Image (cartoon, helix red, strand yellow):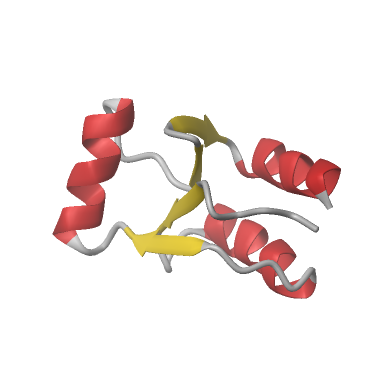
Length: 79
């Protein structure tokens, strides 16, 4: 079973790449903390962490992972 207690997904509801990751998460029954970067606090956190506001961004143990295909591949490998 995938342990997501150390993961946070930063996303924007209008981003098609985020939709791709969110669809994978939903179809596999994965639950994790998610932060919408349309909210200023979440956007500021992401900027402080990565120096940019690119989404989707999966943060694992404080380390950011960008690119939807890489995020999906990582999550798939952990199932």
